[in-house]
Length: 151
Image 1 (cartoon, one colour):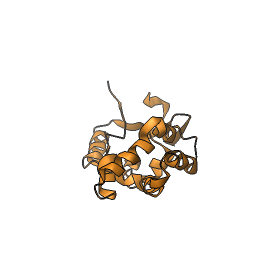
Image 2 (tube, helix red, strand yellow):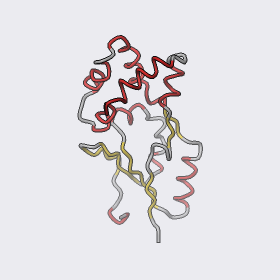
Image 3 (tube, helix red, strand yellow):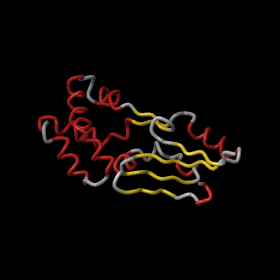
């Protein structure tokens, strides 16, 4: 008998589209958006965001090292990247429905500290959940831990 449902967050409870967001922010400048993406997401740079070891300043230095001419644009994206995310319309109702049917509802998701801070309003459904863990590759950022009976 299934008692617990564990959700990922990105692509399940929250949507995101880095490219569409950047196209809007940078007035449809495809060349600029591709350069930003290359310097933020290319060569596994975003993996360092997920690892949670480097500071924001170190990450920005890594992103802008090979593109100092667009450092301001990269910084703007980094400081506003939470705006590229949106909570799906069904998220809260889905969680409430599952809980009303007696399920324990948890989350387990790989999110960086930075993105969690940037997306606070998109994550406003978290208190509806019974607990969960944000994974960062080198450490764990836990919001709330469920009881061991959940497993």
